[in-house]
Image (tube, rainbow, N blue to C red):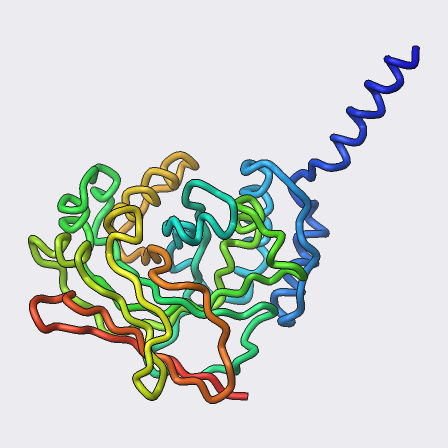
Amino acid sequence: MLRTLSAFAFAGAAAVAQATCLSDLDAALMAARYANLEPADNPGPMSLADAECTRDKLVGFIGQRLGPRAGYKAGLTNPAVQKRFGHDRPVRGVLFADMLLPSGAELPARFGARPLFEADLMVRVKDAGIHGAKTPAQVLRHIDAIIPMIELPDLLVRDPSRLDGAGVTAINVGARWAVLGAEIKPVPGMETQLERMVVRVLDGNGQELDRGQGTDLLGNPLQAVIWLAEDLARSGVRLKKGDLLSLGSFSKLLPPKPGLQVRVVYEGLGGPGAAPEVRVGFRE
């Protein structure tokens, strides 16, 4: 009898420890916190499936205020960022039209509940044939723009240090703002430039805050496109012309500060001596 009671007690404790997909009410509360730039409660430990369910509910609520869906973002495509969150594969979030800002935008340093910035890169889908692409060279045939990008994510929760891969997924991979530079037209062979480029994060005085390189994202940034297309297809979603895809971080997640000016430069992208860039500034 004691063994039986102990077994039931253990099973009950495990059930309490393992969270499930947030209820509609709790997801709405998280969305309200998001809208008000207030920290939300950390979601409990949950499976990736429950995290995706939570993400989809959160996206449904925040999307009511952020315009049409603009595309998707891959997170945790950089091994260093995977290590930080204790997760060994990418995760996916949703981008909305009102999240997109032009290069040179200036925002409050406290633009979110847990604001950060990072060097990123975006591409735009040319056609649904991208779902058949298996190599970076094949991806290039199905995108019509490569766009320098500074992502301004918001880790949202009270204690970001407790977030794991499922937790990052549940908060829509922290999607908040995306600052976009001038579009670059893809040309054959550019997959090699993307792999070899050096991505530098500079402050307003030209001091380097961090740097990365093309290989930091799954060996080649366009591998993140392949992963996104496959993951979306797994969920029954097909990419279409005009969809924007954020590929992941080339830098550490860095804290914004009032008065800080940030410039991200992509050295080697576009040919020898080329260095496309994108800028953002922060104020009180």
